View (cartoon, protein in one colour):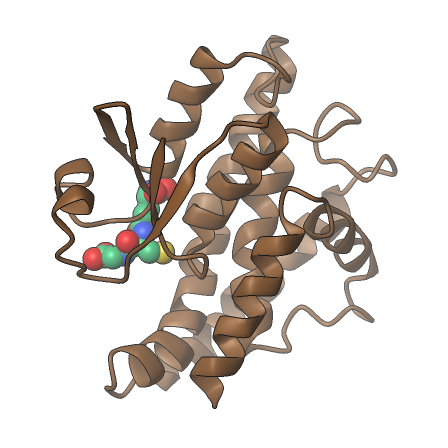
Length: 215
Ligand SMILES: N[C@@H](CCC(=O)N[C@@H](CS)C(=O)NCC(=O)O)C(=O)O
């Protein structure tokens, strides 16, 4: 299976972690924003990452891809079958993909992607507003919600942890807003999830790319 995307994208990171936890083999084909790569454009007609080509079956959107793969490879179960746990898992996926990613996107796009990748000015006022107003509300909710088990749903790793932790990486790349002294449970939970073998090598690559962009 080919995965198209950049490790700096929270949606791609979520999928990479999922694939690692599942033990599904893949080849990552690096593409950037607006990439004209024909394979990528065929798999993702609207040009958004991630997208996959699984032996000719092409699909875009991290959630669509993960739901496809969960049906194809049910074990280990990362989207619980239990109705209540499943509902909670999809809630956390929504929290990560929509709420936290929208906020982290305003920070990361305007402070990193616009100036360092697209070589144009970012909207720094929008980033500052997201950091001051949106981020504290989301982090306060997450801090309160993290259970003593260290996993968001059902006392074991699920898609919930992968989805919620991914945008936090982008926040940390360009903001001190997720201060470990203020959010100690988020700090401990995210360190544990990000150091899993499914994610740690991608995070290391991510950090090397950020260092190269900053340099
Ligand atoms: N809901 C989509 C979001 C994908 C998305 O917005 N990806 C961004 C990168 S983080 C992208 O490809 N942006 C390029 C564009 O909008 O042209 C998913 O979960 O995959």
